[in-house]
Length: 202
Image (cartoon, rainbow, N blue to C red; front, side, top):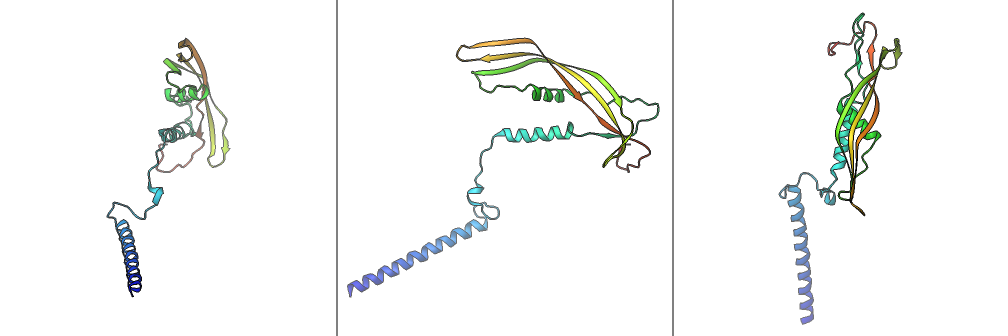
């Protein structure tokens, strides 16, 4: 009789434990899905934990967009007026020259106090070496147009300092470093009486 009473009590205790566990689980589910814990929408579990990312990737994406918007597109200008000036667009900016310089002559450093390179006293000299227009021709997706060539010679003068920290700390200074870059600023001119619509400046 005592054993049966004990077994019956254990069953009731197990049943109450299961019922309370189920009630707690339902309460947690309701609280997390109702927004009481400042959650927005369905929880993503471990994927909702922020993961630290290096600022390099953000800077690279912004730089790629900067280059694509300013230096990777070929502008299409209005027709060349009869007897008017046929000068090319503005010369390359200092930013464009330095980006081309770093692409051609990258800065191989990044170990502070062990090996580092600095470039100081930068001076840029820009010289137009060619400016001419091709005869009219038909370009797909554009129509009849003329290609205007503009070639610039950009000379970069700078002083380069190389810091070596190990095994023997010393500095290597080159005060007469020179790099010559050739940058093309080609663009198109429309040909003929082209109807460009009301939202263009020409």
